[in-house]
Amino acid sequence: MSTDNVNHRIKRKTMQKRVTTAARVVAACAFMIFYPSASATGSADWASMTLGTINENPQLQAQQRAVSANRYGRKAASRPLFNPELQTSVEREGEETNYQIGLSSQIDWWDVKQTRTDVAEAQFSLAEAELSALTNQLLARLVDAQLNGYLARKALALASEQVSRDYAMLSLSERQLAAGEIAQTDVAIAKAILADSLVWEGEASFAVLQAEQTLEQLGVRDMGFPAIPDAVWQDEPALLPGSDIMALPQSQVARFSWLVAKQQAANERQGNKPVPVIGLGAGKQAGEGLVSLNVSVPLQWRNDFSDVNAAANEQALSAELMFKNTLQAQQSAVSLAYRNALQHRQRFHRWQQLSAGQLDQQFSVLQSRYAQGDLSMAAYQNQITQLRQGKRAALALEAAFKESHLTWLQVTATLPSLLTAMPAHKPGAEGTR
Image (cartoon, rainbow, N blue to C red; front, side):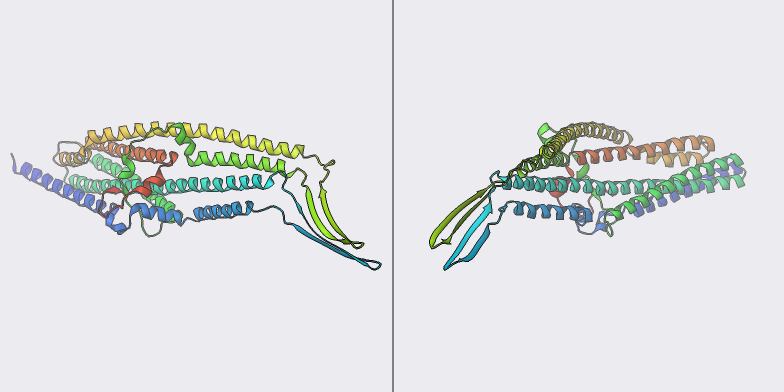
């Protein structure tokens, strides 16, 4: 072997070590920057922080006030409808002074108070159901924003690592070009590979900014991207029986909306009926004692409430049909979310078993083979592109798995109880960040 060939191989090995070392340093820095330890969130528990953030949401607080208002309305509806009326009269007739005193009141003959109380009870239950539905919705939005932040940061870390690798490869190819070892086309290919990585890095960086903006809109300020415990993704999805479908917040909202309309229709019918008035009086007239009993009933000959009552009945029937439609939609949504989450879970776990981190090792292998002269730049580009597509596909599989599982948690309204029952997430524990 000539001296030039020996020097050439030594030079290529030296370049290979520099590229590999630079890539390892970049990977370590990217991991530290984009995946801070769970202790960065302090000793506060992820679940309590998430619930606390939701409790401070103005929309949720407004709904809590609505529940409180309906609670007062329920108490008010249970009180008597009518107040008695005091009536007195005094008159002088010759030498005699006549006087009379009495009490009269409208009588709740048709039990309007009970129908009004039933309306208030249904309205209070509806407000509580709307609060449960809103809590579930806001929690899902917040956890989804945290998940998007985690996925965006992970993509940015991968893209930044690839950009650094490509810069190192471009530097190597430029030195090889200067030494006359490769052609200008190979340098152009290295630049094309770098350009593709820069595009992905820019897209991932923008996704991180969008995730941060979404978290700020949801009230997250200082805790950044808190770690989502792995326990959130552990339970395998399951179908819900019909009784559980009925208990879902959206089903309860539709059910109590129907009950409110139904009770309002009954209250409308009862309230349009004539209200009798009864009065008792005592006094003195022409020197004689006087006791009176007065009863009056409005004659509603000119009042026709049939159209008003029919409108209220139609409104109640409409709400009942909407309730049935909501039940069907909820059952369909739960079934779809279950099947989708189960399929994505199986695909992701199958991929985890197949890959076992082999893609990361192959990046270094390809760089070593190119630096040693075993691969041309065109062959390197082809294989590195396939590996990067595999990394992106792996991230897409993880995203599909966790997003579909979160959708199932939201549709089944499991998220609030899951967070409430979750043990404290200790600093340093693994999780989705």
